[in-house]
Figure (cartoon, one colour):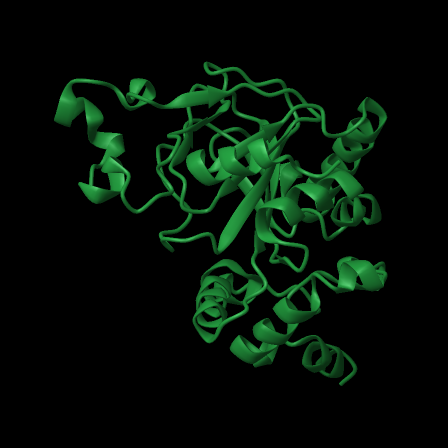
Length: 278
């Protein structure tokens, strides 16, 4: 179902949307099973001891069931509504989280260039690691940004711990719920266990102007496999994402592949394939 004008207005004003039970329970079970296979076999999950975060790139790109999330009608409706039907899929990360994350944005673009879709695979409350956001903090004129406030130092600045920063809210979730938020939004997590399961999809607008294209290029220079020296074996994406793609999915992959190949030519799919045959 397409997003309503009220939902679009909410996202614009506050920088996020939570969609309860976007997935059917059977779909959620399949996703959790596929995520566990992925992090155990491709993401270092077998070595996770709870002492630090275990993170791996491209969480939906290693298993056909996870790749198919990018084909799901409700996921497409959600991202289409926020970023436009021609959005670019630009990777993400999968995690066993440990401890707090502290307050941070994922960018400072000043306009809607990128959004993150977050999937939480365990029931989470404000005291057990739920995502917290500062509504409206994606806007350049929000007081946190305008006045350069260090939210993580709120105890020293205002006598208020970061967990109680005024205006912040906790988005308590259950498996099957999905949150999408502007990359510029301040967010955090506090009080979680040592094995909180979550994964993300990062998506950008399809640039229409030279300025937007430059912003997307700068985004990809900082948030894609090449920028982190990840060798996928196929450039921008891990092979299953491309190899199982139909034309509809490829529509969201082509421009990121092209830009990534330009930014990191030594990791391009064709180059990697040629090197592997030598």
